[in-house]
Length: 422
Ligand SMILES: [Zn+2]
Ligand SMILES: [Zn+2]
Image (tube, rainbow, N blue to C red; front, side, top):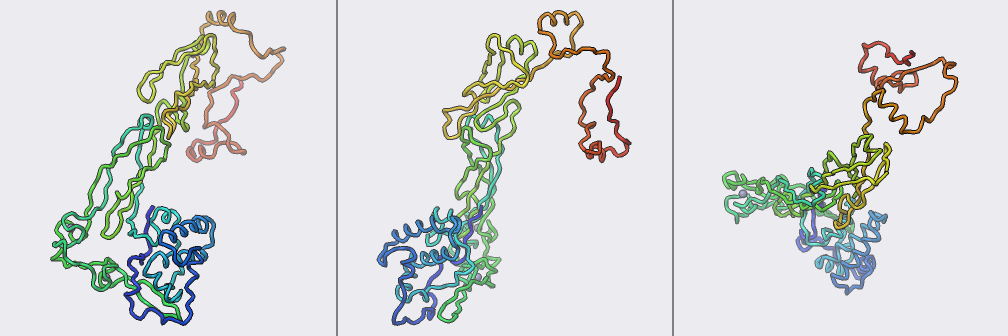
């Protein structure tokens, strides 16, 4: 999530600053190519150029399947024509006055271009954006609550205003690199002028030099100080798990840089009663066998604390595994919180542990007799009683046994897996 830009922002790049860098004008200069690439007139305004460029970005950016080489040409044309100084150089001297070793440079991302962070804009480099997780409850998402979140970040030192020295107005810019931390080296190869960047040795790439005795006592010359801040997250009703909230410019500050963003991603905790799927909720209800047969009332405390009474229909029998729907009693729709998903009730039927002999005859009168009629029962040799299912007794291996279990209980000897023949 960081939007770092390669060194050499357009603003820093001054053609007039390199005497002798311009090639001598030729008689005939090819200075229309860039206009053709962008599809604009030679008299086009900056607005026209920008518009044409953005259109091309949408069509030709490598993210959209465009050719990298072709897009680099587009970027170079735009870089040149969108900067009035460079445009003048181009109009006068053509492409040879401009080429500056574009090879190997990553194309600016489509996202950055469309957000105005792209080339040719007056936007500074940004510090790193940070992503943080925030745990929220289902109740908070249901209600769309406000949550507070503490972040720690670096901000420009207030005492020295980011200068780093005792005197906020002192000039601490590195004299060697002019505060850029890098030095520009110009090379001429044939008719092309190559511009490359090298780290500045004097300031070790930091761009400024402050003597220890001149350091700001508050930030010790670091220009920035760590601080914490509470951020208010206004949860959207019905927001999905993983929804991100962006707080622009709330990340670290650095002199001459735009602060990056703080991005908060919500993680919704599991709820003890409700399971959420999209805008629907599922509630598992425990009812007795008698209730399943004769009807029931179910009192549910909803996510906003209100009580909801669920009734079965008259004469309705609930079978094990039944799922019933209470329409529009689920979560508010994300983005349309006046509408609601459904509430599903899943039934878990609690059976009696045992039945007394004298109760049996009453039940036998009540229910229809059994499904399977067995004839000639005496002729069957093999008879079993069932034991409780036990995962540890399974034979997940075709060769018998259960690998994981065997590793855990190596000393137990061979596992006994057999029918209880009685
Ligand atoms: Zn320097
Ligand atoms: Zn300071």
